[in-house]
Image (tube, rainbow, N blue to C red):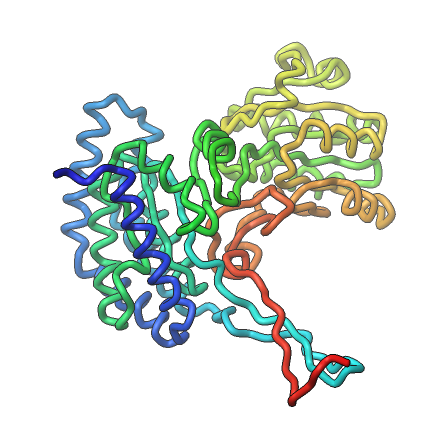
Length: 421
């Protein structure tokens, strides 16, 4: 009798739960050995990885995937190098598990503190990019978690080849194969099962398009770490340094167009707009960025600026398109960001400490910046070594999620025969 998808996923879940108890007590050396052995296995399996990926690319072309999707799917020699380097970097990161902080004696005589511990079993659901398999597996393993990885059907052969290298690394380090499991079936019912198994899975991390994340957030019976949109803003304050403002606003939009931390809306104080917008518009036009603006913006920059609609303020373009709004001041900028933004990343350009402080306090986003490009909102740039994604939730993690975001804390108490009176 053929195993049903539900039975298969239940089997994976049960094995992951058992393996999570092993990873939770694994030594730092064991985890690092597994990561470094997996890196060696990837290096030795380059030909197999390229062959498996070629099969996925051929299938993708046959099924009509667009060039952007095919690019994300491709495993080039440079991307394999990056995966190998990523494993080595994660192996080099400090191990957060077991660290104890804030130990203190209380009047009763007991000592109380907090110990960092793994979350348990983490389910990762992602699309197209096979390198996510390595990113997710390495971070989950180093943080003492077991993981179930469900990649997109378009990358199934690539993910299987990568998984074989991870399994080799686990075996060399004496860790169970179920520490990292890649879902073998492309049946979409596997996702439905994975997100409704709280007895086996402690948290779900979706990485993909908005529709995927909305579906998982709606249907999951397991906590989800996620962000839906990256509608990021830069606000140029009346007290801004014009050169800084131009440099940051250019970089925030044009350094790369697709990432979720790219600026989508530029907000400008009316008192500085005439000095900062014309030179910025020249830069954007030279780089092929389509401009959409409010009436004041269009009056200042000319008829080639399209009229911004209400929908533009709500839109994550992921493209060379920018909406611009001229505002009365800081309060209106904060109101705009908190109303239209996605709580991802927002920046103020100002030389006023008071305005900067108010912006930091009142803008309700996972990353809030002063005189810096939104493109810095990234685990590597924040010194986390790597990230599993960005969270715009307020619980449990917020902003780039690295090793510490894949853990929690429990209280630990030391006594010496103490009893409560």
